[in-house]
Length: 150
Ligand SMILES: [Zn+2]
Image (cartoon, rainbow, N blue to C red; front, side):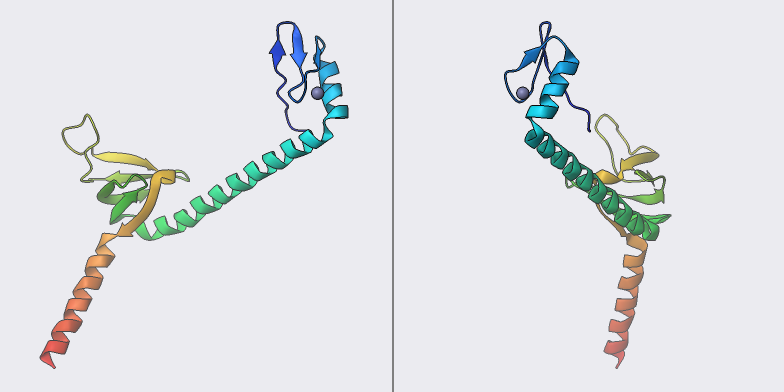
């Protein structure tokens, strides 16, 4: 059984589901187990849902890790969930954070961009490698030029 919180009122432990009180914590636990199976089941379901949510978040981070593979050691545009955009050289750091070197981002209290900043992946919405973008642009321009020549 998951850990159950039993509120205390003075010298009494109180059942969280009804008015039952007892100075003996074990008696309250016994009471809960015998009288409140339904509530306990619901509590367990809630815990399971929470665990599922955590699993989904983990999978999301793993998906993002894939995204960082492409961004590693590249100059990127990083978009945060609050709308902040940061341009800088991305270096994958660990499961939860990335390091951005030589960015254009000036945090509050700084008068110039710090040499490196650490970003939590949870706050990052998107990472777009800029070098690839500009390469693509160049190629597109080339194609356009070719078309013009034709
Ligand atoms: Zn009760």
